Amino acid sequence: MTFLLHLLVFLHIMGVAVIVGTWFYTMKRPTVTVGQFWAAVLMLVTGLGLVAYHELNGGGINYVKIGVKLVILLIVLVAAFIGMRKTQRSEPVSTGLAHAVGGMALINAAVAVFW
Image 1 (cartoon, helix red, strand yellow):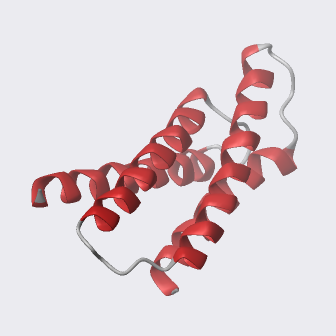
Image 2: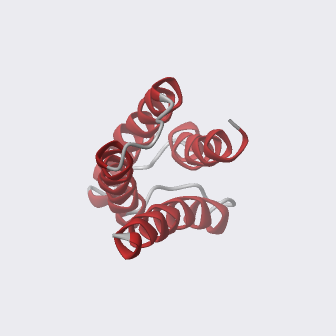
């Protein structure tokens, strides 16, 4: 079970790394990629898996923190989906939308670390 916990944490961190790394990489010409959307989906799935793991093992869960992180992640997910669809249709992605995806993912990581 410890391996499962470490795998979920690793994949969750990789999701953040893909979103924020791509955001930094495309900073001069902000856009949203398909990879950012799927990384947000990965973060959602692994985050729910982490909560379930801790719930099953009797760990104390801060539900307020998890709720805040879930709301932020849903914002990232919706913004990434909208941006991905615009990119696939060769439509311009607004700078604010691209920065919302990367910036909110970075804020979500900060909440995880500092709360």
